[in-house]
Image (cartoon, rainbow, N blue to C red):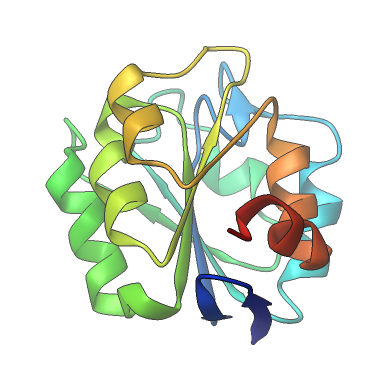
Length: 156
């Protein structure tokens, strides 16, 4: 469990992190440098869930050593499907990280939504749904690994 007391917002208690695969953790089906190490570190405090349509057929192998669960969703992966997954985990204790238009509903529904502007860019719809915007995935994961950064960013 990850906890952070955010002034002006209250207690943030996270038990899960749900991440989009392509465009967020990976580019062209290959996990980005630094991601696996950070996910392994996070898996000690949070349950890690990677959601994907597995467009390139590489997600299971790429995430083999990250200490989490890879969930292949039916194509086309829809925003409501991702939001429903967050709901089933418990939206109030879940962080969501993504970049695409189909990530917007899960970013909006999660207790903490983080938008990654990665190699594929980011959808405006997802930007509007997020609580925090970062320039790349390792920045997002570092926010969770070092929760005082969340406090600095979200306090009012």
